[in-house]
Image (tube, rainbow, N blue to C red):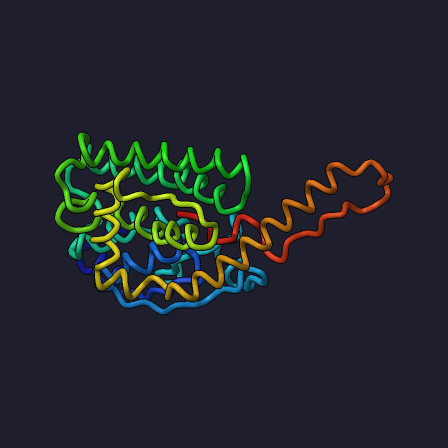
Length: 272
């Protein structure tokens, strides 16, 4: 049946429910986008160490948060959800620009954030010594690429990546950049220097000052407590894994020395 404007309006008006985790920056992306667009939604907190049957049913492929349920239909993956919100509610505050090339560029840098920058920051948090030093260099190389785009590239002269207002890339980069300060406090490693990355630093300051962002990001004390616990666990697992790998006394029937973590490592919110 052809979708009429009335049918489309009824579909958009269907209830929204978000399954997420309080410390997950991927969850924060969706929460922030919903607030920016002024959309009401119900929220269900998930225990990533003991995931609900409903979450596993709604996202059987990746079994992760966030998952947005709209009118009974489930959609996983934060960036896909953000783009869906723009498509389903075009009359609300847009996240993507109107120009096709600019839209593609925003998607490219979102992929960069998840494929390059985020894993590098996570590696700094989960390592020590030479491995951590190498991860810090990777973070700085990635930030230098973003700084160059803000200085001389497609985002030159803009307050936000989306222009005068935050857009898709701001949401993706920003909901996670607050972890940089948390990681610096926990690890003692300086990741973002205002002198080295002045434009990125200024953008982050303006982003974090937004009312919708303040409503979305958890209190810093709570994030610090969580991050210290996660780092302790990750370093403990790494040490146990090294000990197991160096052992030559185990027989084929013996269990490895390292125990499985209480929650899958991929679910731990050390992303950017």
